[in-house]
Picture (cartoon, rainbow over the protein chains, first blue to last red):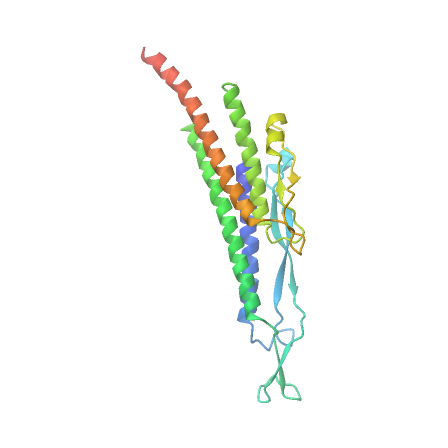
Length: 142
Length: 112
């Protein structure tokens, strides 16, 4: 079952990178959001990955699984100070006419997004290679 | 299995798939802080591993560490991924050849 659990490992990597990309897209979508349910401007979010032993139904029987997948351990909120813009006419402006905007650097988000995309592609390649190995093993039987 | 060559090939393929799984883990954990590249000592395991036993995993050394403590090199993993897949294909083709020989022997015996 060695090869099939490799697929599970790659799938966990793909899921984790997709979650990361979702967070980054959410950050960019909310780059100008000044109102949130919790009050104040939107604060950018980031994911924390941790390695994770993959549980497969058979692993309990064999007790010798050594595959390590990845999971999103935590979503952290970046607490950097909001950016103040002088917009006295804005409904969310404070007494001095300043509006708090999320402190976000689009370049930073884009670089992270590209990183997530590349890592996702790496997992896809790993899955394709393992799939190829499985189909070659099946060929033996023909 | 059929003969010593085939059982050697079987063990070789088992080890290759175990190694491929580690490569998949390394790629999945490319962005995990503190994760260290895992590998198996292929030569050692191939000569000393008892069939059915799981190989020992070791940490690959000589890889530059990123500030977050992760030392996965995508270039290394891409190379290993391709190398393992190709080795596995060679081994499976050889096993197929062995089985074909036996099948041919059976078929020839039948037609005579």
